[in-house]
Image (cartoon, rainbow, N blue to C red; front, side, top):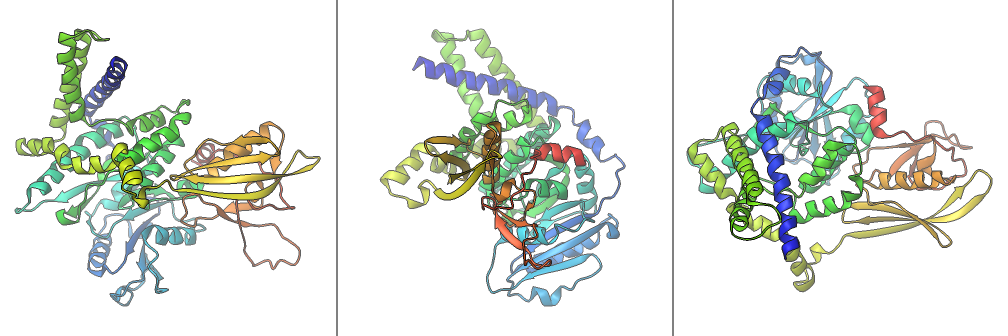
Length: 515
């Protein structure tokens, strides 16, 4: 019991110092304010809107885009109409800077897949520098695109500020939402941005460089959990998604929902990424550790309990140490309230937020999920494990050796197992299958072996197909009797006798080389 108490306090103590540093950094936000004063060149931007029977909101958003201060010749708008039955296509016509992708195959493909289809169509368009993703239920000001352009000049992945439009007849829970949103935007996200720490990406308001999307070969934003995982992926590459408060949009209160990745998912992602913490990428380490960080209010309550405990009983840390860290945390929280620009009433609503969210927290804590999974037989919570085995050829340049690859996806994490007789090489669990395969290929190369599969071949190029693992691609080898205009589709692990080994370059090095 004593060991557990000590470990919990070390955890709270580290968080207290961390939170205090965030609060001190938030005092001066000149860095963010000065960004808007920089004179940056207008790059050619592509604004992407998705609509499924939401014509009125789409029409309003298009009108607001026509009124932008950004040069009309420097941006284009792509509207995705996903199986719309509200006759949107009859009311919207293409113009000089408006294009329409009409998906009308009597099947609604969904926002994530629809965006992936469009990104693949735009892959060869070298005029586009960056994408801006905007939800049609948002309202924007005339400098929206200009602000996105400024933010993108400092970082390849940028998240925006969501401002809630208040009204006079707000309910108690709606006031809690507004207070929490203000606190997150004005303090937490801004302080993290000043430190260069990652924010979570969201397809509702996101700006991202086109070359960055293509280097990663994916834009996986299906839900709040996959958005968190994509954020972790960008951090691991050395380019965390940064929050830009001046890149903002407005949303009506009834359209706004507070979404958080589930606690169990964050813990699972943290455990899967533990093996990656041996790195010099400090921002990535912080991002992983932040997955299990408590809220400021919870930390204060726990820290206060340790103050009383250490004053009466023997504890690993002296009362002076415990009280000092508690004072730092309390001072930091006071600064955070000042920087959040909340009124006195809104501060009270903020204090109620933990009670408001307790249902969501309880529903997602691992013990309760365990009960639902194994006692109440909730099939939706069973481990999502998929395994696919393929036969491959490995070569050392002299002989070909028949082997086996096991491609395993477990709870959204991927790993690959290479088997030859009784010998095995296993990758660590990775965010995407392509990275697990890359790790395995590197291990085999260290022993002088090369897999004769499409992924390891110079003729292979991946394609954006909407899957988070990015397993599909194209082969450019001119096989006998192949028609030059034909496209030869393949997947990463397909074996091929014409395989020409390629040199692997890390994504981050490739991006730096092309900046």
